[in-house]
Length: 135
Length: 135
Length: 86
Length: 86
Image (cartoon, chains in turn green, brown, blue, orange):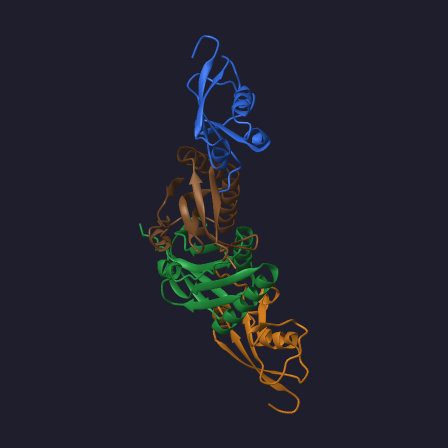
């Protein structure tokens, strides 16, 4: 299985990533997931999330996840991009692409990687709230 | 919920579709599924699939599916593109994007729409096999 | 169309069209006749389609129809094999 | 480092760093000491981190570690709160 993992402070360029996909003629299903920062958290207006990663360990733990995903499902490739630093509301913080020969496997693997990522990959976020106007 | 449904004989321009997405600041999860024609079917080399649709009914049945999906999951938008005519091996035959506030809903809705599409949307395909070389 | 029958236009799709050797046709059904009655008439005229009846899907206009559904004059019926999109 | 102890470098991440008021530090552990022994030393020096211990995650290098894991001289240990990627 091909895999790539990128932690980056730059915006995630989804069209470029989409244009750059390579799918072998035997792989029928491509699932892309984009997670965006919402403008509210628990009803409170949010300007951005500040992501902090422990980079070497984050890469290592993503690698372990992708190896485990490959053991569970027949995957052709998985690509992961995760932002670090300030990510404004509406911007993408995470992007995952899974290529497999069948849709069910691609969807299941994508959901599993997202769930596990939130359990083991050392990345943290801190909310930047909208300033409250003084009366 | 916003929705769009397109049947087209033109190639599916995934980067353009990706660039054209609009996600409200309250929607955190975007799932894109691309289904590509594989170069083999039951071990036999395949050149292309020829898709035939009953267009008015296909659009109507897709609409029903999207309405049902909206009743099951809180979705912000669903966009569907399905090819008609000749689709060569490696090309995309179907593309679906689901936007929701949470990843689990977006992934579940995407899988469900694909499953139901294959059950009720009047589109058929005919394999164009690789010519067998005469000895 | 006379007082004892109504004309229903039927269209075949996918390999049903090839099996029938024609895109469709007009069929006469008694007033109050059902989708099932129409399929009897289709099977009679197109014996190569008859074996497909258990797997055939039927639509009236752009909606799926059930065998016991009563047809109305002017209904446009479509007959096709299981769908295979994606 | 003397014969009765080994030095372990600890790094704090996310709000553990703010609670401790420092990026980390070196801690002395007896030879054969475990992650759990190290956490005792960390809690002693940083009482504001002590209440976090039940939810704290610990890594040796880039791999998660268990409380009973025996530390080796030169190990680099990371201590952090539950992760929240995505």
